[in-house]
Image (cartoon, rainbow, N blue to C red; front, side):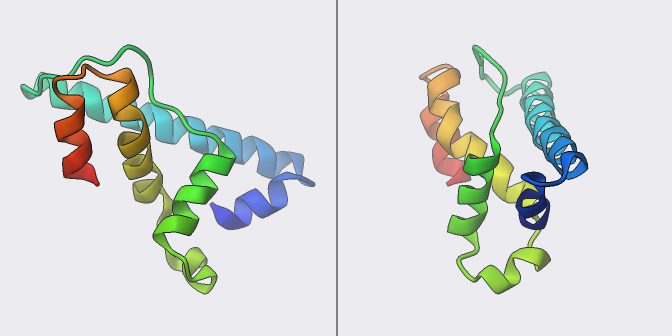
Length: 105
């Protein structure tokens, strides 16, 4: 993801791939919340999860400070955890959100 981002400014295909990747991560996160609801979790979200390139890069940089390991690190779980940590208290019901955010932190 980091390598793709570095090419996205000059390469239109890389840019479109980055946009599609981040949209897919957001959609997958929404699906996870939907699955949790179907399995009995009590969470109500007012809007979809999403992220942007800068936020995703910041999440990876915070989780893996050693830049040499970025190519070896799966970015998707880091980005999803970051979305839950940052967004859950803002878009989901207050009674449930703090508990879920603490579990994911």
